[in-house]
Length: 209
Image (cartoon, rainbow, N blue to C red; front, side, top):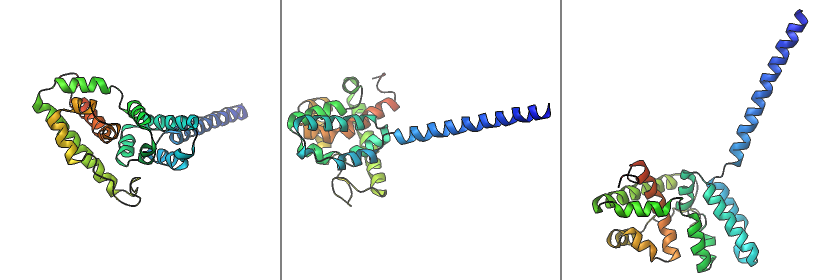
């Protein structure tokens, strides 16, 4: 009877250990499979876009799109502010640039723009100012970190949104300016658009214009 009870306790203990091992294994697998800005950086550095065939080139660009879209918000903004895809973007054709921007814009972008345009002018300005402030804070955090800019190795990243572009957005309007902008300008606007969407969601402005 005693031996049977000991075996039962032993089996229960082994089962508990097995459960913990499986749980830890699942955790580490999930952590390792999580997409990060550093993984995007490694992918960009591993591929020379200029040496690929048309089919390989399209596949590689889609791979970058998929990786960027898989990033959680903070890592995605880090990747944008650190300009991880700038080397590839500069080598893309205008059509490739346009497609790349369309595929990597935040989900619900069109709905966000429509809601933004319905807001009173004062609230639109405040939303943009709040978003620019948060971008500056993100940029300062990036500069304070150990990861150098992909655009200028070892140096700080360029301004998130240039003062000239900020003035044009406020004067012309975000939707009008974005719709008539080049792919290069849209790429510069992408961090602001994503931050603006988050600002509106956090402030309850999206569903209550």
